Structure formats: structure tokens, C-alpha cells
Picture 1 (cartoon, helix red, strand yellow):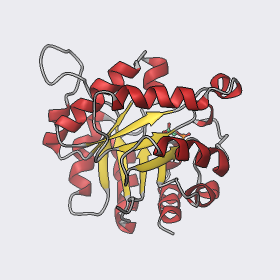
Picture 2 (picture 1 turned 90 degrees about the horizontal axis):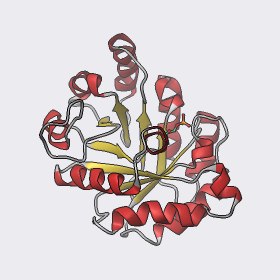
Picture 3 (picture 1 turned 120 degrees about the vertical axis):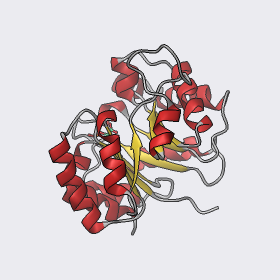
Length: 238
Ligand code: PGA
């Protein structure tokens, strides 16, 4: 099976109704295929409305592991699916580091997304300390195995995001990304797309996406600038 290319924007906690409207106008004008934007919860309905009938998909950045109930402040997978959501980012390093999300919680959220018929984008990645200690493969394997123990990875997306490269302007070299992607691919069903994330910019995207096991990117900062995001999407389709 041919792996599909995907460039997903992770807007994180940025934007307003006005700035998102302007950004979406630019994206819709170009209307590229093979891309998605993951917006903050309050703006998902706006995003869904604006992107209806376009080639651009959309997703959420987080989800509850519970199906429903007394979980004040949480958002269920069924609610996201109800809005027409396609992708949900699970286990982003910011969730793991800042909100104490464990491998087990990421696995439960992954299961909730699948159960609701959406596509999880599972993030794994090592810290600089772990890389320097030669533990990169052990760390990403443990993060992925926690999910594989309880879930099938069919119809799911993996994102390798070295923590030291996220928002730092210091991307992994194409060779570093390729090595980890090749390692992770051995654990996944054939046809699984593996995205690279961490300081992907228009200037470095083409070289990273040219690696044989890199199927696209998860883009933070550069996804907030329409021209940059569109150029990165273009680099993935070459
Ligand atoms: P960045 O973020 O592109 O700003 O480094 C990537 C991510 O966190 O997904």
C-alpha cells in the first residue's frame, strides 16, 4: 500500500476568530490536498465551516480519554467526531511535559479517537538528554509500544518529534529524522504514514521530506503563516 503524504499544522494555543479567518482564507485560496490544520477547541466549528467542501482537512490537538460524563472542562472524541473532525493529535510532548500525560494516558486517548472513527496522530520523541545518552530508540519505542500493546495502528498516523527540535529553530537533520523513522516503521503496519515534526520551515522541508521514510510533517510555528505553511505543503507533494 502506498503511504499517503500529510502535512498537518498544529496551531497550539494561538489565534483569534479574526486571525484564523484570515489564515483560512489564504489556505482555501490555494486549496492544496494532503494537508490538515489542528485548531484550538473553541475555533473548531469555525474551521469546520470554512473548510467544508475544500481539500483541506482539520483536526483537534487533544481529547479526553473518557467517552462521556462528569469531566469538567474535557472534550470527548464523540464531540469532535460530531463536528466532522478527522484528526486528533495524541501524546504531543507539550502534553507529556507540561500536563504530565503518561504513555498509558496517550494510549487511552488514542483508543478513544479510534473508537470514534477519527485518525489519531500519535507523537513520540526524545529529549536532548535522552538523545545524548544514546537512548533515542529506547524512548520512542517505549512511547509507541504503550499504544501498540492496546491498539491496532491501522488507519493511524505517527509523528516523530524530537523534543529538542520543537519550537527551538533547531531541526533534526534529514539523516537523523530518517534513522528514527526507519526504526519506528519496523513496528508499524505497512502503509503507515510517519511525519517528522520540530522546526520544519519552508527552507528545510524539502530536504527532510526527501528522506525515504518521512511521509510529511507536523508543523507548529510555521503553520501560523499561510505562505510558509503552503510552501511546506508544496514541498511534501514533490
Ligand atoms: P514547531 O512545532 O514546528 O514550532 O517546532 C512542532 C510541533 O510541536 O508539532
